[in-house]
Image 1 (spheres, rainbow, N blue to C red):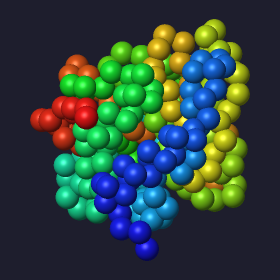
Image 2: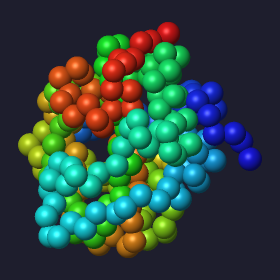
Image 3: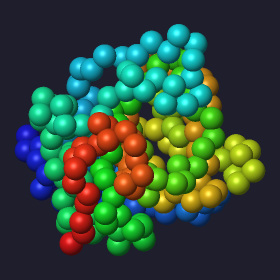
Image 4: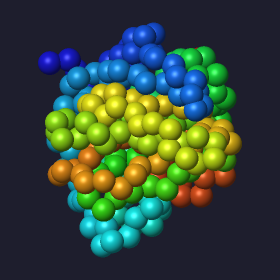
Length: 222
């Protein structure tokens, strides 16, 4: 089995970006297949972290901030695949690759990766990520065949529904946040647990520093 480390993740991300599909409607976004090594995805699928009970409350992820999980200092120390992810996406080589591919300015931002576990009752209202987030990559993980309709909902500038990204393990939907990059999740039945990574580079205005992979270290690019 391929070793799960920063180098293997960087190499795989380079390969995946070289054949990524760009879509320009209703705003520029990319579908990136196999951005992570298969071994990393397999490890991420089996990470055992508590799953929150929504208790009928949803619409924004921040409504459940106290039960969310991140590639943070504690989890990087305890979960090897989280450590590899943090090291890979903090690496100047990776940051440079992402900057050049997406045309985004990431230097002097912080790395933030959420390990999301969504269950029935979950939904997200349309939002843009504009502001402190400079790049958004939604990396799908779970491999339940019943999850094929659980991709990200994509909206027009007036917040009307436009389309839905495919959902399959190791497929990524990515975009550079702008004033029209509306996305969300229409409420629908979720069988089991919909697992994904939400990877962002955020500015120094990000207040919840405990969520960051390296809370005292911004990224540089090579």
